[in-house]
Every structure is written in structure tokens, then in C-alpha cells.
Image: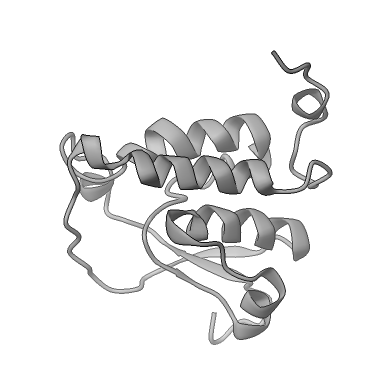
Length: 138
């Protein structure tokens, strides 16, 4: 990002073992973020780890997008950057971090924030599929 002005967002890429540990991280990503992306923002489906825990962006990008509250910050920023800027993302080496994984029962607030952020994005967002936008409510 520092050497390439065209990069608007850098997402941390976790090692495969850390991202897919059965009792480790990635549960909210797999159970909430990826299904929300698949249904509402399919152009982001290629992002393997949308909630990797660390993101970098130029100040100008952050000032234009703003930051969502709570656990929604990563997904909201990802959606907003993709909708407002030329989509040029870059995986980045942001070093090694050790995270404490929460028990499954404590992940509901994260999932709720992520769903709230996705539903708060405008209905005319460029990534929102027309069939999802026109689907009748139950």
C-alpha cells in the first residue's frame, strides 16, 4: 500500500491452519459474513477472509468511508471501499498476531453487528444483486 497509490485496501491473510482450525477462528466468517456476502455482495465472494482481523487503508479512503461501530467495522469497510473506489485490493503481510478465540456462545454479538452492517448498506450499492433487491419480504 505504501508503494502503490492505487491500492485502496489491504486485508490480512491468515495462514490456512489458523483460518480453519475447528475450535479456532473463522467461525463468524463462515457462518455469517460469507453467506451475507454471497447473497448481497457477490462481487466480494472471492475474498477468502473478509474478517481476518486486520485491515489497512490510506487515510483518504477511511475519511471517505468512515468506520462502522463494533464488530461490523471490517465488513462495512470492505463493502464501502468496493462500492466507492476502483476495486484494487491487495493481500498484505501485516505480521503475526495471536488472538484469543471466544467460545461459540459468545459470538452472537459479532454476527449481529455483521448482519446489521450488511443490511445498512444502500439498496443501490453496485454489488447488490438485482434479484436480492427485488425479492419479496416474508
